[in-house]
Amino acid sequence: MSRDRRILILTIGLALAACAAPAASPTPTAPAPPTPTTAPPPSPSPAAQGTQVTIRNFAFQPAELEVEVGTTVEWVNGEDSIPHTVTSGTPGYPAGAFDSGRLRPGDSFRFTFQQPGTYEYFCSIHTRMRGRIIVKPGSEAAPSDPSAYPSPTPAPSDYGYDY
Image (cartoon, rainbow, N blue to C red; front, side, top):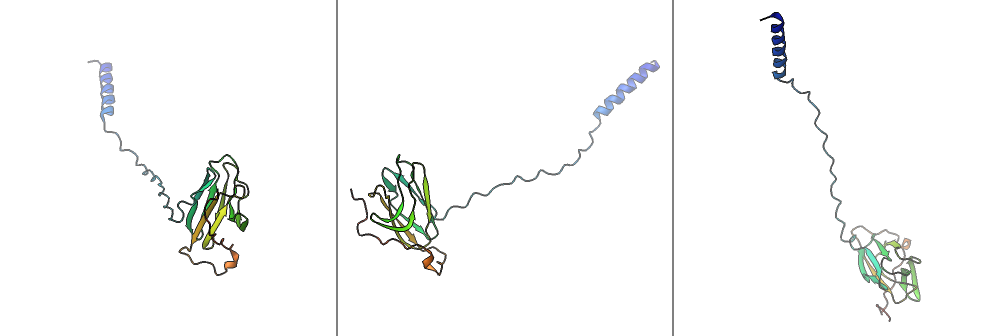
């Protein structure tokens, strides 16, 4: 064989040997950081569930709601096409504990009940619309100064609609 041919074969052989050689060990990489997971939100307490009153068909639904002290109730004029109010007391005898003013369709009003008692309320525009919130003492002790909170409305003898 000629010398050039041997060099060519040797070069090809070395090239093939280099391709067949085991690959160098991979450079170690840091493990991927753990994917953060969020815990599911805690379940609301029974007092926090069902604290929304919907104004629908000229009525508060539900008409009566029982909650614990410290609960915020939300009234939503969600389905009637005219304004309503949420006014504490009874027609002719507003109690002054809360008054939403006019709630246009889609508006809402919130009030946090800080004292146990029975709170009657009505719509001052449509006085046949009436409701009641019964506030039970919660698991936390009530503040020592009850004068800081509005007084509940005395329960009337006639609860319901006066059509």
